[in-house]
Image (cartoon, rainbow, N blue to C red; front, side, top):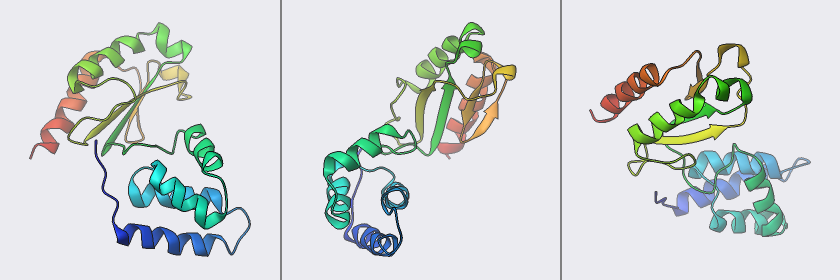
Length: 162
């Protein structure tokens, strides 16, 4: 999926950085703003942040790649996280993930070409009693089955095609 970086976005980022530099620890707030402004934090943006904060690009990249909230590539409009923790895995979360891969025609970690969906496999969502679990746009779906989740995603697909 391609992303477009505009001069207006860069200016907004630089304004936010100058505000953050007035307080201790400007890196994390700057990265959160960057993710919001651009939808991701690719290397060209990391270079701007590094220059503005007088940090190395490798340090910025290390933080961006460490935290799952940040992304080097744009995320889709709808984010689907399938829990692959032990409780969910033994209750067939792999089957649900496979169904989503087939339905959306993407692999975990990818975004659909239209930018509507990003699919991810999570280590643990923390709702083991509801296994298997997944989230769609932060909403938890417990005791999930391939059939029920396919229906939810197909409804979202129909909504997006309007």
